[in-house]
Amino acid sequence: MLHDSLGMSFTLRRVAVIAGLALTAVAGLALAAMGRKGRVPDDHTSLVRSPGADPGKPSKSLSMVWLHHSTGDALLRGGLLDALRGDGVAFHDINYGEAGVDGYVVGDHTDVPDWPKTFNTPKFFNVVKTWKLSAGQKHHDVVMFKSCFPNSNITSDGMLEAYKRHFNDLVATMRANPDVLFIGMSTPPLVKADTSPDAARRARAWAHWLTTGFARDVNNVGIFDLFDALAIAADRPDANTLVPQFSTGPSDSHPSPEGARAVTRLFIPWFNRLVREAGFSD
Image (cartoon, rainbow, N blue to C red):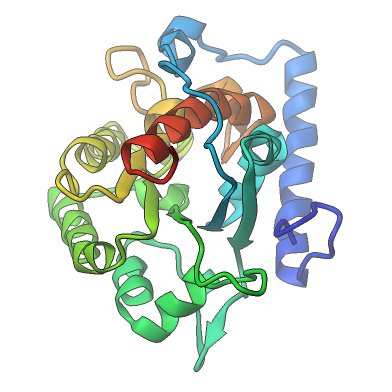
């Protein structure tokens, strides 16, 4: 797994996911070699946005667990894992098939409607916050969680409102654990072929609400805008869809290594600011 070393063995399910990503990555490289059609200018992307001031890595090593699936794997392999470790983060993750409790497999449930059950059921959340900890540690300093790109196919305004209710249901647990820094991520965008303008617009609205409206008065919560890091800007052609060069391919919404680098460029300074603002670093 990616808990302590990328060289450690994967579960069969995860091997299948990684193998699929590898094949699509090869296809993406072939497209690039031919001069991939549809590449958009950098000024249509997050690359024109400043990552903001970086105060440097936290003053103490922080332990993090991340609940995610294959998009997270692509980001980690593309540079995010090395950057987190360079930041002094002791990194662990929960992925497919992991963290089973009484028949409920926490790692299999990362869609937006799943989060209230995972976080608000004490026996499930206790497994999350203590996952793979070293002896003597009570819980992880940081619990990070992300839904995958299918969740950005928001097909109605009612679905968008339901998403908001699911997240608002998390606030009580977050308040009850002030010594845990909760980091959510907005859902990553879909390639143009797999979404519609209205669904993509709602996905942008969902990301905006998460990063500006959700849990605004809860000090130990931060939401990173993964959607905005990977999507074409709202005022550009094909707005709110995955930047072509940030995708593994025209029909695959997994991020490419270039997309992973774009995310890492923004995430690390944002993370370093957040841990200070939330009081998790001197």
